[in-house]
Length: 442
Image (cartoon, rainbow, N blue to C red; front, side, top):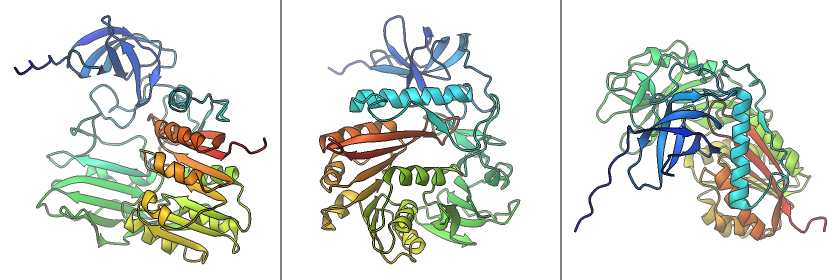
């Protein structure tokens, strides 16, 4: 006999006390019946009316929005962005929190993930608990830093540019994104009719005047004539193959970091905060302290940001091997690092390529894996190479904590951890962990 479907609780309201912050841009609360709520648009210590947005009777947890604040936190402010709030744009999680409170909440999330998944206190991770703002992002409450140099706009059925609502395919039409960098805003994407497009990505390079628009048309749609407020190159995503094709202008943008220019092909990965690349290179190099003649690995190397920094510091007597799965990124990395004869870039997944290299010993390792992390198998392999130091760059504290536990099993300990708020108004952070053999100094 088929079980009756559970009753949906979407739209139900509960008056609740808001508990601690959780990973993902929400806080934890419980109904009077003890059911867990993940509540957005709330802050710890508040009393709110939470309206369920996802979930059903008997579910392990429900998702909800704080639709009325009964007792407000001292850290609460009116959201500066007119598109923020319950049921609106899902891009920013903490518009309603003071800047200092945002960083404190992010720090609490990192500390909780380290403790729960790696069994590490902040002290054991060599971290003072501080989440550092990017240079230039110290703004008063109520103001928003314009930092995002790459913005992916969705398009409504009638051709308006907008941003996705939280956990939804619905589009929130906007006139202006407050966190978009000036170089993105000046393109005027929100002013145009994009009928027939599924999405429009706007890119404003850091350190050059390059601007690019990447168009993803709906099946059968014709490309619009792109006439924006300033010169821009245009790329098109093929609806069948997903491949990028140049429409006009350069098929890449030029980004500057660590004193070098990096070519990044249309839509390719580059840090979205204008200060992020330099901030992360500095943190990694200060942690690794490369020496002339070192042999180094740069895993998930992208277009060669860290590989170039390593190559510059290990000198002609040293060598760097980069591994990257993306074909275009590998082409860009080889171009960007062509003046370093002792740098080699291999294409493929790290877990497949690294064992085939035959490398059984290295001095230094940098890994900057995707959000899911490196995983047990790759960490075990790296732990066997005897590196003097390993720099782990992470955009997800949960994945970082899991991998740090694997490194501990492989004989490595965390020497230092630095946490950077490179994504203001959102729940995201960037971490740089420096590891060394656990026996060092014993």
